[in-house]
Image 1 (tube, rainbow, N blue to C red):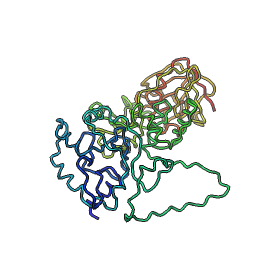
Image 2 (image 1 turned 180 degrees about the vertical axis):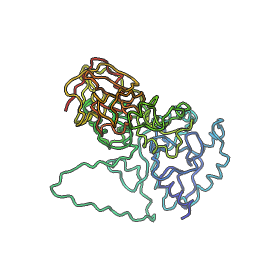
Image 3 (image 1 turned 45 degrees about the horizontal axis):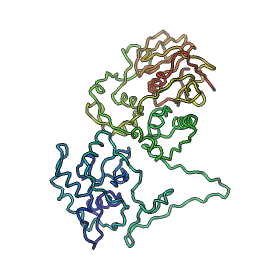
Image 4 (image 1 turned 30 degrees about the horizontal axis):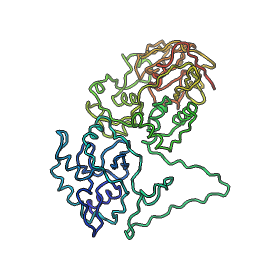
Length: 482
């Protein structure tokens, strides 16, 4: 099969291009034909890869192409409307003089390829919406269209489990078309006495990240946002249930996305500035405290590390979302998560749960306000027991290393003054406790929070420590529980 035919077949399978005529039928009139355009009104010439997009219908009847980060990348438009818009093109919208050439073969019988008109999901007839430029400008400002109805139009051969009532929008290939046989997967026999176990579908990284963003925005931190369902995510879900009484099913992705939409979708774009790229940065973070003490500041080591922390992300995940991106170039646009503003409130009591490896903070009425994964002590340097109080809060702190009262690091046996910085031993925040030398603080290694041990203190990600610091004051009780 030629490359051209493969592209056409892919387009038919994805069901987001022009509805083709069945061989022997008259070609659709121009007022019935559809074209696929990008969000700035240009004809979409490069067909997205299969599986990289979804198709939903908005409340105006348009088919929108949504990428894996829930960003609209294009939509379907009537041919007549596209021509009108091209005739009234704004300076930022290029007039496509090759339109007839690019669309001349859409009525070619090769488009059928065994998928007739019935192979496409039914969609409401597009309204004669003459406000495309308004919608386009709204998208440019907000990054999204209003009123998207989450109605998946990706074609499949059968009924979607759990959506049998919507089977009318899922069409099989027309009768008589030559289709490869679909083998029924073998299923292991279930023992007679085996209990029914609900099956949780495997979530994509983007779906997990959306859940992480939702929890993070509401003050129930999953730690670094990395698209992975780990223990820190489960702890955040447990905290959510304690605070609200609601159990969130991670596989209910529609619930998460619908709730996210009230404050903006999980992913957004960010343009790297000259200030971002300028630093200052350090070449690497020394492990030896004497070498740390020789530096002026324990800054970030790169723009990528700085941006990952700014957006609460795992550094490797940020790179994965932006392959081949030069993070040192101002003006480069990158994809990041949209974490939203810090949680606000007044904390009256904190519980440091050693076994759960989590900090939970309550208001005066006993309502759980925030919860953060934490690294709390170790067997060799345990955290305090019982109750202590917060004495003071220090932002951007330096660190005094004293081997006689702290711990022994390497061969260092003298007091050292380690400079401040996000890569310092206590990160960007220090919340001092009434037990000397102990505190709640940040970390230079956010991906290890809740997964390793500390030297007795309570270690949080820098952003969680900063959020907590904004809600506490001297005198707040911290209870350490086993």
